Length: 154
Image (cartoon, rainbow, N blue to C red):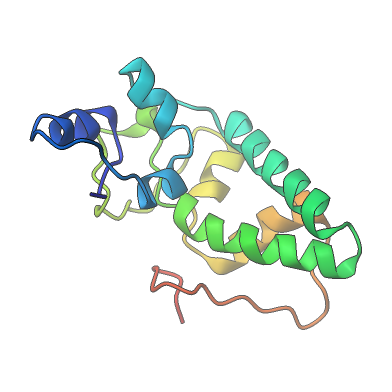
């Protein structure tokens, strides 16, 4: 139950004789985790591939809540909550030891490109910047406070 962030974690859990495993935070941090488990491999997913996942998410949000101001801001709110988990991902190509553990907070690092560095930021302002790349400028006096106690929690 939980704390699954790699196919090794999933295999170890399944070896205990359980009928199934539950993946929660792991899927918020690495939505491609299910592919990694199925294919029994680590996926060094690029920042542009990760950004496409975010683009799809915002597209689905706008499709569901509408593309008016209210729909954009509802989509932004959910995107920002998700980004507060996604920033915990450390790209496989930058890890010293595989696999990443779910409760290890990544140290500050420079990514292999600007977008990877931006996605790794634990600053709310950078998450807002990513949301602006996808949804346009935030409204005047916009603020965001993550619901969980991440490093950016104030």
